[in-house]
Image (cartoon, rainbow, N blue to C red):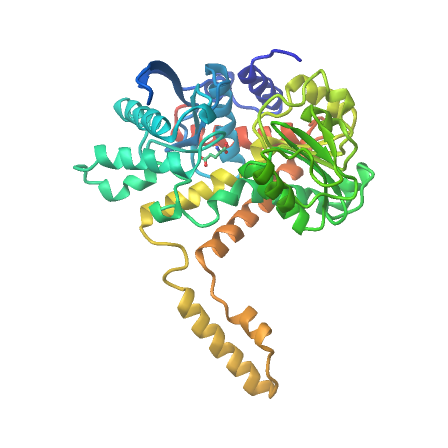
Length: 473
Ligand code: GLU
C-alpha cells in the first residue's frame, strides 16, 4: 500500500480542481494551506498512578468563515498530516453543502479503547483547557464535534469545561454552542447521532435516482434491490446500512475490525449488531461466510460499496480488485488519490467524502443554531400548526361531506417535531448539493469525476468569500 501524505492527496484533488478556476494563484494558495496548526503535549496521570505524555492537535484550515468547524478523533493513528488533511476536507465539505463555516479538525493520539472512562475524561477536559488557552474553541471561533473514537460523552465533557471557564463572560448563555454532537439532555439536537449515516443514505439514493447515470454503470434506476457492502458498523456505517436496508437495498457484506461476513441472500443489519453484542464479533453470523481478513470483503462483487471506517482503505494495492459500481465514501479519505485514478478507469462512480459524509456537519450546524437561539426547532409552532391543519381537515370534510380515515387525518394534521425538521433539512441539503455537483460535472467534459466537480463547487464558493472580503481584487 502506498504511504502518501493524506494532506498531499487532498492538495492533489485541490490542484486538479483549481485548473478549472480563474482565481489568482495567490488566492488559490491561501485557500489550500492550513491557517493554523496547533500541536500540544500534556501529561496524563493514569488510574494506576503511572504517567503518560499525550500528543494532541487542532488544525484550523480556513478562516474565510467563522466559526471553523470539525470533529475531534481519538485514534493511535492520529498525526499532524492526517489532522491537516481532515481539517481541509471540512472546509470543502462545509462549502459544498452550504454550511457557513470554515474547516477545522482535532485529534488526540490515543487508542480510546485502552483507557478507562475516568482517564478519557481527564484527557478530554485537559485538551479542552489547552484549546481554551489558545482561543481554539468558542461558539464564534472554533466548534468541535465527534469524529472517529469520540461521541456525545466527550462532547459534554468539553462543553462543561468550556462553560466552567466562561462563567463570567457576558456570552455565557451561548457557551453550549462551543461544541456540537452533545447529548440531547445537554443541549444537543434530535437526529445528530444518525446524521452522517442518514446523509450517506440520501447521497447514494439520490445518485441512484438519476437514470442516465445508472445506465452508464449498467444499473437500473433506484436503490431497490441493489446489493450493498458496508465497512464499519459505527455511527456512520450502522445508520447508513440500516437506512439502505429500509430503502429496499440488500446488504450482502459487512466489515468490522475483527473481520468481514458475506451472504448473497442478504444480512439483517440489526441482527448482525445484536450478534456482535452477544459474541463480541460479527464473525459466525448464521449462514454467512466469514472472512478473517475483513479487507477481502471490499473486493467482492456488489453494486454499492460504502467504506465508513477509516482513511486509505482502498489503495493502489487493492483498487484493481474492486468490483463495486458505486462507492459512497462514508469515511473521510477511504480512497487514496492513486486508487482513485485506477477506479475511474474502471468506470466506477465515486461519491466523494466531502459531499457524501457531510450530513454530520449539516446537523451540527442545526444544533449550533439551536444553541444560539435557545429554543428547540418546532417548539413554537408545532401545536399551532396542528390546530390549523385540524381546522383545514374539518372544512374539507364539511365541504365534501366525506370523512377522512384516522390515519389520513394523522398524516395531514401532524405538526413537525424537532427531529422531523432536522431530517427534512438534512434531506433537502443533500439532494440540493448532489445536483449542484452533478450539474458542474456535466457542464464540462474535461471534469473527470464527481470528486473534481465537488472540489470545483467548493473552491468557487470559498474564493467568492475571499473576494468579497476585499483581500483579493
Ligand atoms: N466529524 C464529522 C465530520 O467529519 C462531523 C464534524 C462536525 O459536525 O463538525 O464531518
